[in-house]
Amino acid sequence: MKTPRLLPARGPLRLLALAQLSNSVGDGAYYVTSALYFTHVVGLAPARIGLGLTVAWAVGSVVGVPLGRLADRRGPRGTAVLLALATAAAVASFLVVRGFVPFVVSALVYATAQSGLAAARQALLAGLVARDERTGALAHLQSTLNAGLAVGAALGGVALHFGSEAAYLSVFALDAASFVACAYVLGRLPGVAPAPAVAGDRLVVLRDRPYVVVTALNAVLLLRMPLLSLGIPLWLTERTQAPAWLVSALFVLNTLGVMAFQVRTARSVSGVTTAVRAVRRSGVLMLLTCAVFALSAVAAGPWAAAGVLVAGSLVLLAAEMLQSAGSWQLGFDLAQAGRIGEYQGFFGTGVTAARTLGPMVLTALLVQWGTPGWLVLGGAILAASYAMGPAARWACAPQGRGEPLDQPRRTRRPTKAGAGAQP
Picture 1 (spheres, rainbow, N blue to C red):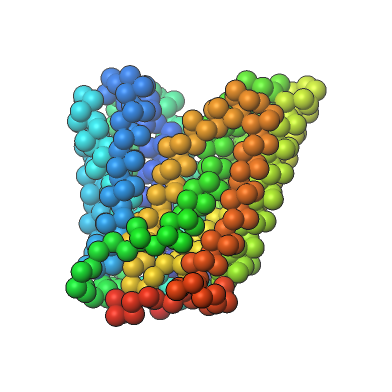
Picture 2 (tube, rainbow, N blue to C red):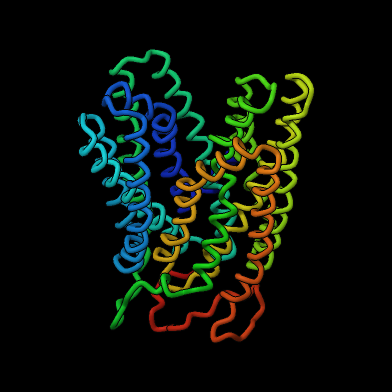
């Protein structure tokens, strides 16, 4: 029987994909209902919800780095299982919290466990999948993630249709159960040997300046993430004549496009050199994307504006898939052996930075500046994409000596490498 396109062949990678699918269904339902749940059921003001979530994710992303190191030291499978269960408990606690302080505490546990779980999963993947297959594996997981989010969003839409407290509570119960199922699937994976402890073992990634620069540049590239959820909806309704329902259609277009083409796009990335090339191409496409979106403001009539926005969304889709594939490869290949969890925990802070600062940046650029703001955004992303090459070259050259980019990064302290941390 032929393997479904979205699922890899039988083995550890399929189990990783099933774990991703299980919790992404719950997350999809959570994302579309959480804001209304916290306002209508918990009774919090929108401003307090935003403040609480911002603080929670800021703290969670920082704590995710030592949690990633814990996964390296104690073993990523067991750590991932515990963090998945912690996430389930945090979501379940939302069912009973009815005040701002309990909400912030639950949100802190949720964000911290999610950040640590992401790092532990990456360390687990690094220990189970060969180095030259990791980007393709992550592409499979991304496609599975999008499929689960789409299903979950549909279930959340049913809850929104009913609009009752019971409907909202069922969504949160589903999300908690999905993380329990995720923990069960992760527990069925083969174990990965932890990296051995050494004297004076501390967080190294914070002192690894090349990797810090790569992470910062990647955070700039990830400003594309709030575009579909915030930037484009605001632009479409404030500056164009396109119908408001197009916001939903563009989101669906992006989700289906990633599901269909992310795996194929990732096949062109197999090392640091090809990753840098993919990131540069994504930067060029992002500049083109921004220019096309800017043109939608001068398109005459709603259908002309809609056509321009659809065209821009297709270019954005191509840019997103190239940037994702390139950054996945760089995040793994530039990390020190035996510290994948720690490094991936830090690399993941770029996502949090983009989600936290992105709304403020996009609102200022697109809503207040208009067309010039689109060009500034595209120019900044293009500059970051071209700066990634020198930064990756720096990271590949310990002691200041250059070496071919497609070589795996040398470990400065080989005694720290753990069995199973690098295939």
